[in-house]
Amino acid sequence: MGAVAVIELLASQSASSFPVLNAIILVPVLGALVVVLLPNSRPEMMRPVGAVFASIAAAMSLYVMAQFSSHDAGFQFESIQSWIPALGINWHVGIDGISLWLVVLTGLITPIVLLAVDPHHEPKSYTAWLLLLQAGSFGAFLALDLFLFFVMFEIVLVPMYMLIGGWGYEDRRYAATKFFIYTMAGSALMLVAIVSVATLSAGEQGITFDVVELAQRQALSTNTARLCFLAFALAFVIKVPIFPMHTWLPDAHTQAPTAGSVVLAAVMLKLGTYGLLRFGLYLFPEASVWSAPTLATLGVIGVIYGAIVATMQKDLKRLVAYSSVAHMGFIVLGIFAFTTQSLEGGILQMVNHGLSTGALFLLVGMLYERRKTRAIEELSGIQSAAPIFAGFFTIVMLSSIGVPGLNGFVGEFLVLIGSYETRRWWTIIAATGVILAALYLLWAYQRVFHGEPTATDEATPDLTLREGLTLAPFIAGIIFLGIYPKPLLDRIEPAVDGLIAHIENHSDYERPSPAAPVIVDHNQLSGDDH
Image (tube, rainbow, N blue to C red; front, side):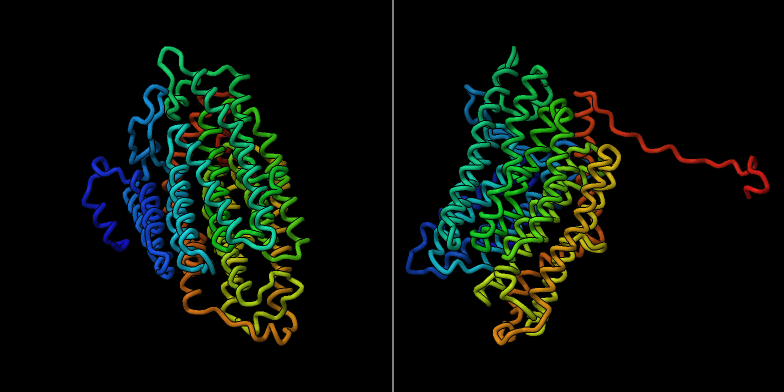
């Protein structure tokens, strides 16, 4: 069943009669089971079959996008089924403007990497793990029950651990273990906080893990809420990651297979920033305001530190990995500035980072397949041998820098202009990160693609048609969002305004009012003034 057929089928069903969000989560799981049951004698079938199921899930996410009401600040397409009634745990999923585009991004990325990247061995388990990773990511972005979210948040660790450890490079086992231990350590504290929030908020209404209900109750004392927030924030800060919890990321990205790096950058890192928005700010508004200067400071340090360390890298993939630390720092600054523009910019930048950095990792993977090296000093003059490849790389690189007309500029501009109202000095320092991004990316591009090519460089094959078609959706998204981001912002804004209003109602935060216009009475001006 093609993507168009799936959309037509869903369009014939009402939103209330068909649990489309449940289907989005379960279809990749079903696909993983089908792939596992395929005969080992047909390895060529594994990735295409997996891509079909991933594409069906992607089509469903596009249907949700098309049917999503841009005027509704609440959760849409909600589905609630009792799961563990004695503990107040439900299968509760829903989507709003904050999670919508992350779900769409997750849907589109997985089939692309399944079709584009050859694992070289064990395609069955490779495909199954990628499908489970897609399902877990969907579940984490859609969950409105804390227990369900925790399950999904943890599920994604296993496929990524297996992908890094099974299909990575020389130090893959060390990188996979480090990734798993870091994220599990933060998650353990978050589980304690989840149980604490649910039980301490129970009262006469009974225990619940429902996020919406808990956000409305606000039953925790100030100190308890702050402690619980710190436990949640630690888990999310590690996942983002921001300084100083970032050290697992360069190793994981460098050692992961290309598909793992793309999904890690485009989807999994967003679980951290999304978690800060959905659970940090929503459940603990007072604690979020209390901790905002510290977290904004860590985000800005990440912007500068990530950019400086990226400049020093000798491995092209590791350079892109450190650029992620810098970009994610921008998003954290936008989240904890608490203005409509900064939050919109942060959410938009999550999508932008997924497109630009995901495409960069794909291009670096393609270059490695050609040259069997990622060492910058061993590459030179690639542009003369592969001009189309260099052209694609240039567009994606300029997007990552934040050049006007491409998607990265819109997100960074909104973050900076919104954060300046409430975090002025943080914003001024973070703005230097834009300059540093141009430094490390342009310098790396100059060394790899310009210069005098060796005989090996001259033999580097140019981009194939198949590779070009793989990169085309990324390029289209980069250009479209750079020119016309309005469809995304229209759907993001109501949810952002609702979240800021929620923070104002449950803390001492007041959003800055727009500056009053200056009205000049020309009748009072003297002749000299004229």
